[in-house]
Length: 214
Image (cartoon, rainbow, N blue to C red; front, side, top):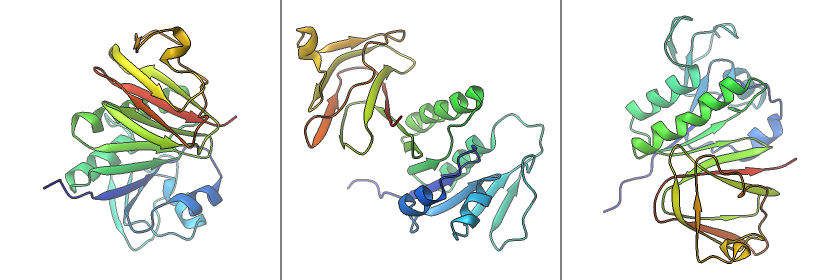
């Protein structure tokens, strides 16, 4: 029997004020964690989190009826990563992280690296906002056109035997049966779906899938 899917949503504090996107896309039936000032976005969306994980360096500690896990400001990990670790401890295996891509590239890259932690712990994880949706592919993934573009990058290791169906650029564009993508290759970016959906598969490695809007 397949493992039960236990869904968790984490709302981070990147400076994205598209509260309507949050209201329209959050799974209200999931366990909702606010990473530090992410709780302010949730309150603007009229959503009460189930837990807050924070050091409160960018927000005030709220008087709110939920579990609050407080870390010191000087600590080893970010609030977003601590939220993911907390979700793992609670047994959640499907995590969606809102508003984890912001103006500071170091923070954004650190949050992207959380995907690898989740992969290693058999947790499905997606980072999402109105401009980007970021996830990993280790075998096969089918997705619909919800963003204008998508790009593929070899994530921390070379990828072998990549095939793309339903998109403008596929392995056939290069007159190949499949693609090998190295960790420094950039040729698989700014693609777009032409059919109803796109299927991406690979034989070896981990792909970073970035769906994006301008």
